[in-house]
Every structure is written in structure tokens, then in C-alpha cells.
Length: 434
Ligand SMILES: Cc1cc2nc3c(=O)[nH]c(=O)nc-3n(C[C@H](O)[C@H](O)[C@H](O)COP(=O)(O)OP(=O)(O)OC[C@H]3O[C@@H](n4cnc5c(N)ncnc54)[C@H](O)[C@@H]3O)c2cc1C
Image 1 (cartoon, rainbow, N blue to C red):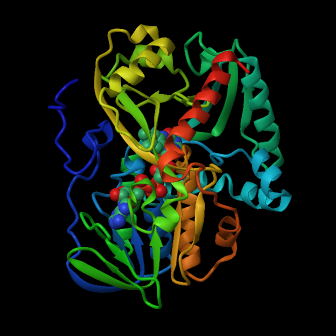
Image 2: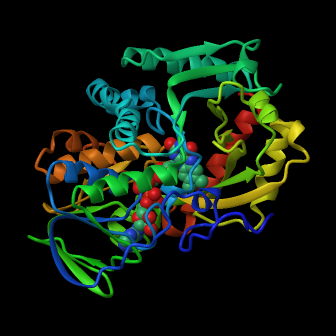
Image 3: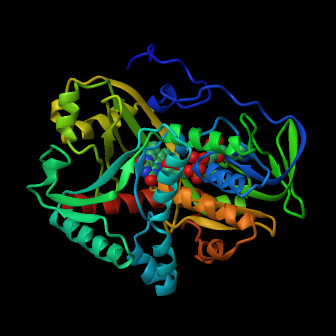
């Protein structure tokens, strides 16, 4: 591991390649004293900042309170993969919640990616956007599953999907691990911390104020609720709670419906352009079709960024590289000598249904969290929808809020071991090709 001497430090963030290469490193001030706003947003990840930008564009006075730094949570640490759709497939959504709900969610399922690309263009956000994603299959069973996903998606108007034969895998990734896969030309990848920082700057340019190092300790739920940190208060007409897996004990009524889960990412040293271009010729992002999956992509400075691993309950494993590097070497034996320069962990919020948990705490306080493993696009969509809700348009919010949220079986004490057992079972099925 290097000391990252070539990069300026960026305190308050995980020691990631993203933090080291962030476009903005200056720290915003913390909230001090009393202030009033139309909308107060708790948490400056994709969800909170997406809502802030939506509301700022509509002319609302917005204050964002972030406990640490903008993008401190999953939004500034993830694989950067723009994956369309939700963490639960549309088929299951239809089976569980009926055709009408599936149609409504299906109609929104490409919007998150469109929001991202639209904002990057509109605000000239420099975040290394690349187009295209590849879902890689290890087995014929996974190929059949991907074919079913494609057919279902096409019913919902997604026309950018193409099955990839075994022979054509090497156009996207040079490895002998996969038997084929599915490409989504509407997917892609970004430097996620630079995306959220760019969106935050866009919201600020329209009048939003973002306070960092301002952990919210209390939120009123009545008319004109007051949101309090240790040093100040914000009185607002509406409050949007967007703290996701990092929300801690605030509002246990809603945090009980999600479980923090960690995933780990590591980044190699810059590779010879010929080598990295040879491994990922199309510059698509890749994720495999296993239950506990590997995800990887090129970075703009020719590194390989490789993610995987899972920690139910949100543990931060000690030797991150030892967890991920063996998988990377299975995929790309040619990288045996590549130095690993960065490795970090981050938490996303998992719900039992894998569907985001969206709702009202009162008539003035709303929340969205639990986008589970695929949240880059969904958080952008739901942040926008939270913004619509605060602006008095409840229609799309209510579609999401009407979906049932279920507690994890086993309560606080047993929910982690029971989920680990479930994941072990699905992992075993993957290993046996079932
Ligand atoms: C390692 C990793 C890799 C991933 N890879 C991908 C991927 O490639 N593609 C994909 O689609 N998804 C991926 N995800 C999931 C995706 O990153 C998340 O779903 C998404 O970023 C969640 O955004 P968010 O804004 O809801 O939460 P976060 O980004 O976690 O933001 C929540 C913010 O709220 C703040 N906060 C919490 N409590 C308080 C409080 N009391 N007061 C003030 N602020 C508070 C936190 O500090 C944090 O900054 C990954 C997640 C992880 C962890």
C-alpha cells in the first residue's frame, strides 16, 4: 500500500482513490446559530444532494446538514457503476406488488441514469462519465436469468440491452471466467465523489447552503419542524431524511427496516494503457451475476477499480486487500504484479425486500433510504421524488411509499446472523450453478 504521497489529503473522507482525486477538497463550514429554510435535508449523499438540486432548481430555499463531508457515505465510496433499475428485479416486483405497481416503477426505472447524465451535461460536471455496462454470467443458468431480465426490461421500454455470446465476451472483458452476459448501453460509470460534489456545487450556485461536520441530533415532526445539531438549528417547512446506512439511532422506527451492509473496493496502481485497455477493451463497467458479486471498471487514469465482498451489519474488515485481491487475480491473472494503492470499505443500506424504504414520519418530515446494492441511479431518482414531495407533488412519492417495508427476521439480535445464513445459501447455489 502506498502512502498516497502523490495526492493531497482530504480529511474527513475514507482514504479512497476518490477522496484523493476529488475535484473539490475545501471544507464547508459547520452550522452555527439559528437559520430558516423552506426545506432542510439531512445527509449529503446522492439522495440528499439530488433532492437539494431538484428543489433549488424550483426556487426553494434549501439547507443541507451533513454529519461529515459531502459524499462521506456510500455515495463517495461506491463502484461508480451506473446500473439501471432497482436492487429487486421487475419480475419479483410484479409478482409481489401487482402489475400496476410494477408498471409505475418500470416507467421510472431508467430515469435515475437520465438524471445523472442530464445533470453532468447541464452543469458541466467533471466526473469521468463513460457509457456502457456488462453483466457477466458464470453459468448457463445465469445466462437464462439474464435473458429473462432482458425480456422483462424490454416490456418496460428498455431498448438498449443485448445478450453477449461466449465468443463475444472478450470485446468487453478479457477473462476466461464467463460464459456470456448482457450489455446495457444505457449503463456506464463515473467518479461518484466528483459527481456528488459537482451536483452539490450546482445546488449551491442556485442558492442552497450545505453545512459539513453538522450531525443532526434531533428532528421535530410538527408544523415547521426544527432540526438541531450540537451548535445550531434549522427551522423549515419540510425535512427530508437522507442519512441511509449512516443514520445511526435517529428515528429507530425507520432505521429498524434497513441493515447497514459493507462492501469493499480496491484500486491498483496506474497500469500500462495497453494492459488495461486489453483487459477492458470497451471501457464498460462489469458486474458478475453472482448473489455476492464482483464489480469492476477502468478509472480515467488507467487503474483497475475492483469491488466485492460483503459485511452484513456494516463491519469494516481489517485486511480489505486480502478479501478482494484473490478475486481480482482469478479474473485477471495478468495483474499478479500490479500494486494495490488504495482499499476502502463503505456501507449501503439493505432492506429485506431490496426495495427502497420511502415514506412519511409526519406531514412535514419525509425519508428515503435502503436502495440496497444498486443505488447510484435509484438515489438520484428518489432524491428528485423527495424534492417533488416537498414541493407538494405526492403522486410519485406515494407509489414508493405504498410498497410494504418489512422488519428483518430475528430482530436486532438475530437479523445479522440470519441474513448471513441466507446469503451463504444463495452463494452456495451460485457455486453449484443452481
Ligand atoms: C462500497 C460500495 C460500492 C457500491 N457500488 C455501487 C455501484 O457501483 N453502483 C450502484 O448503483 N450502487 C453502488 N453502491 C450503493 C450506492 O453507493 C448507495 O446506494 C448510494 O450511494 C446511497 O446514497 P445515499 O445518499 O442514500 O446514502 P449515503 O451516500 O450513505 O449518504 C448518507 C449521508 O448522510 C449523512 N448522515 C447520516 N446521518 C446523519 C445525521 N444524523 N446528520 C447529518 N448527516 C447524516 C452521512 O454522513 C452520509 O454522508 C455501493 C455502495 C457501497 C458502500
